[in-house]
Image (tube, rainbow, N blue to C red; front, side):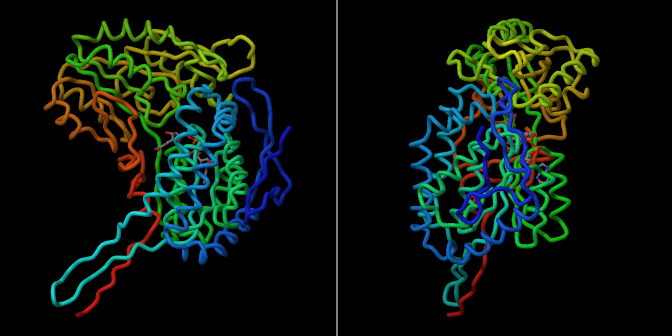
Length: 479
Ligand code: NAD
């Protein structure tokens, strides 16, 4: 069994306390690797290494930094099959998803920011013969990047790449639930001769590694993706020292379906937006709102297709729904299904664990569709983050908007209609950071990404991330 190691100052190392955590394969329920259960000492060593590397890394030209980042991108591409297999095994997601989405996207994150910094994005403010201002964008120092388990390497690289491209050095903490591809990334850094100390990877828990990292006095900025409660905790910890924060948090996203939509296209995409990655994507549409004239037809046809989804081993090419990430997470999902029934919900399909051949101890949950619940109930207000959706009818556009906006979250929303004016009108009024019209999860890396209300603080993506990881400095020149 392999024991993963931290990557600090260009070297692989065991945690100072010598302790390790089990890493469990969700499809089998078996421990298959050990990960460092690191603590404040390891964080201190990683921050010191990043601080030491900062002057030379930030002094490189953008073109030089770009070359280093492109080497990482290219190596990810060369090791794609191995990384995809590792991601699928570690997380439980179908191998074909890891191969087609997670790992290519991790490669793209590095390549996107490696090339973005080659384009000029500084500003000059002309004051005629009086003088002019120019605005420099300076890197800040050591960035803390903390990521969740649902899209492990995809979200890890989404933060790291812009932080490094902008000239910062990084201490990154992957989720302790899915540490494996972050470890493989440290191997890649080593293979391509990435400068020591520029990117340090420390494994461990939130309290063990996350908190010492976000409170460290030499860490002035934190980019975090994870749950809203954890985001609130980090916000509190960071406030006294005025650290710069970017928080990408939970969601309870509405999928608003009008009767005039392209029904077949909507149905196909709604299967994806409900159950891709076992419903464990912060952007999944977990509250489906359907205009009354097509409500019965939708419930019947959608339920039939959901019931036909193949739940299976992540490695099986036929599998559409893999294992959920852990036993506690499976139990949380099943508890929410029980709660939905107590709240008066009707299970249209699913609602139970699944026994998959050859994996008696795996964490499989049947894709579940629930009807008959009011928007105010807990099932419709709290993030379940699993293969569970609710379906509710509405009669008017106003009612659809009121229902869609009736949670504390505001990450993403999807809407389906063939009426162009309504599409833009509704998109305008939805309380969400991202709206997809007649589509879902079409991601252009140039666009701003993030949520409103309790789904987050700030924006990443495109030049927004480069803005977050730099400070503007205005300089006035008198002529
Ligand atoms: P989580 O909040 O439990 O953990 C996220 C990361 O934070 C992990 O690395 C964890 O170890 C660390 N952490 C935990 N406690 C910490 C603390 N006190 N201080 C510092 N770090 C701490 O989230 P999760 O269960 O890994 O991921 C699921 C959540 O992430 C869901 O709520 C989902 O919606 C959200 N998410 C949001 C986005 C987005 O872009 N908005 C994307 C993916 C996932």
